[in-house]
Amino acid sequence: MRRGWKLAVPAVLFLAVFAVYSHTLGFGFVFDDHEQIVKNPWVKSIGASLQAFYSHSFGWGEGFVPISYRPMVYFTYAIEHAFSGLEPWGWHLVNILAHAVNSIILFFLIARLLPKGEGTPALNSALPPFAGALVFALHPAAAEPVSWAGCVPELFYTLLGLSILFIAAGDEKNNGAAAFIKFRIVPGALFFIALLFKETAVAIPVLALVYDVVKNGTAGLFTATGIKRYVPYAAAFAAYFVIRTLVMGQGMAPAYSLHGFLTGGLFALNSMVLFARYLATALWPTAVPMQMLDPVYSATEPRAVAAFAGIMIALLLLFLFSRKNRLGFLAIAILILPILPALYSPAVSRVPFADRYMYFPIAGLGLFAALFIGKALSARPGLGMAMLAATVLVTVPYAVYAHQRSLFWESDMTLWGAALKAQPGNYVAKQAIAKELLDAGNVAGALTLLERSLEDNLSGPHPEKSMELMTRRALSNAYLKAGLLDKAQRNIEEYLRLAPEDPAANYNLGLINQQAGKCVDALEYYEKARLFAEKPGLKEEIRRKTDECTGAINAGDAVRQP
Image (cartoon, rainbow, N blue to C red; front, side, top):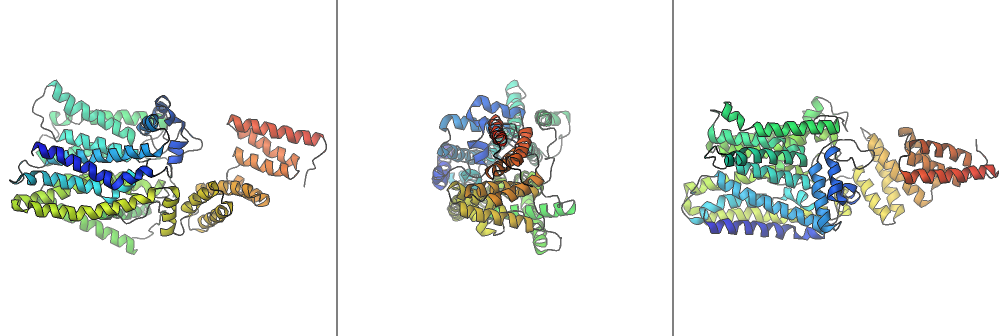
């Protein structure tokens, strides 16, 4: 490939990414950003972010279940905070730049993978990797990770994974120290860092293995020389696993299940349906973000049958194509392997499907596109302009749709409003919208949605206790703001039946009783709140209210109610 193409194509890719996503610079923080970025003390400075290396990902807060270990995410957040504070545009700019860099790395990776001299015209050598990288750059599934400030894990573990594959695809011509560092130490180190961004990076060494098999076959793979190639990956994973286990007290999988009814066969069945959705998303995403789990209960349900048939047909077509070009098997691996860890999400997530899990896999789709065009140009070199036109015909609709899908992530109201419109029974969306209304002063509207959210949850086939707690907590605060003390009291009492050691709830119930003149009753709740309170501010407020009630009792101003 001529030097001019090596300069022009990255520039075009950068401009294409910026053209599609520059509007996201005006977006705000959404969803988990408020907890993981805005309110998170770890991101306030690089020094503070180092705490993430010896704690689980939510160790900065209270009451969070340890489900992941991603310290590099918070270290990156701290760097972003150092440059742009809490101005969202700076965080969105980082995502745009990361996606552009990933697209450029993929271009050079595909160019290195494909045989040299794909046809005689200059366009023919650059077009296959350009088309593959452009498919990745403009694919609508990338809209979520690029448009959501909190998607640093996907963007950066993908960056490191593509970089490792680029190194692995290089020519290892000698056994000197420089080659050892480049082809052994550097990939191992990048893999370790990638794991610290997201545990899904466990797929990266397997992708490197697939490439080696595609390139060299299995001969010598299990010899001492062949095994040495993977020792750095094994050492990196072992170090990560030990650190993660020491920090979290568990292995790779979260130690809890959000949907306890998904046991054994049901879990496998729903994971298969989820896998089929991801394969369909590789062609054209259709799902609105933040859709709650809609489980399949039988293998004979139409969704299950369609999922199984779709998976078989897709894998068969991919396999048949790859038999004629062995690099197709690498494309299959890139498309499928990073998805597999996400199939655990029905057990641990309220919204198990997300486009962001397809971010790295669509690089595999890009490689398929490059292989297809490369094969066509090898057979008929004169098709260069026709293949370029076909690339444009595919990627322009992708770009338009990616822009449209990015608009979901403009604000919490656009995100959760779209989720609720697509799934009217989505009680998570109702609670999220209620929070926005409450912050805007629309207490009546918030109360209506919170009550509906609670009703939808409790009336469903599998009521979710943790969500009930969150909804009742928010509902109590809304009732108090509206001055509806009787409703607030009944709701808090229900909440305390589920979480009797919650200091804030006991404190609020004490306040309600104190305002009703029942200071003796209030003291009982203040005492319970005092026993469980940990925050100094709450402890001081409890002490002050306790003194007020004690003084009132001593003055004979309170009468205990039966």
